[in-house]
Length: 381
Image: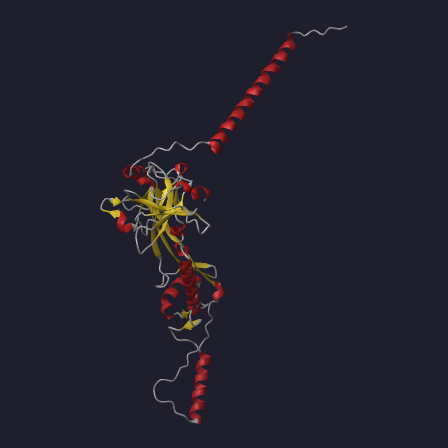
């Protein structure tokens, strides 16, 4: 029987293998632990503990810097054979609306209402009005724009000749001419028309010759004219700013007409350093069943837009409070906060300063009947 001896070199080899295996185990453990920590933090992290601000003044002081005034200008545009122009005629004037929004992160994202970002789609009535205007503008352009006009002249030609464009009478389903129509019968001015065969023949001959000499204009087809509404400019102003507007871009609008939410974002994708506290969505009250009539509701926003916001010392946000007056229906909740146009998109808090809703509508005729989209929809959106 042969006995194999393990010499010094073999001992070293075995030792190295043991060390390598140990290193592998340690390395694998580090990777597993790191992954578990990352995913655990990302998906199973606990929301930060809620600190109750316990007064209107504390809530205002905490979040006044995060709430912004939104200014949105929009207008009617026409794309004619691929060339886009903005229409500036009296029945296609550019309009400006004001709303409220609030920062929800440090990357310049601002939550507001979708109807602040698309006011022309804010209701069925507005949609119908907009569609009628779009249709009539297209027909008017088609009634004056001839094919011999160059693309560079579209804007000036339409503005110059707009008053003679045919108005479309929807009730009659036809044009109502403001200018002269090609089909309008013309009678000769001056002396009474003489009725004799010779004179009639001469007059007919002359009229035919004149008509033949007038060049026939060819008009741009209605199918080559597309009219639509879009944003001209959207910007926000901060509380305490001196009428300084920060440029924004619309990032997202809710596709659900029942969820009146939208997002704009500063073009530089950076929330200003002067905004000390964003409104933390992790602390929002997402269980709308816990919101009961009689509980306090506090809104920070800009009702009436610039009319109330602008002061001698800059733009100032305002605070209004009331009570929840009706249980949530799953989408919206009613409260008795004083509000009006301009406060659309304002955050609504409970007595501790937790976000409970985003203000979106009210009753114009009487105060105290206003509604907000409940906070649980924000995360899904």
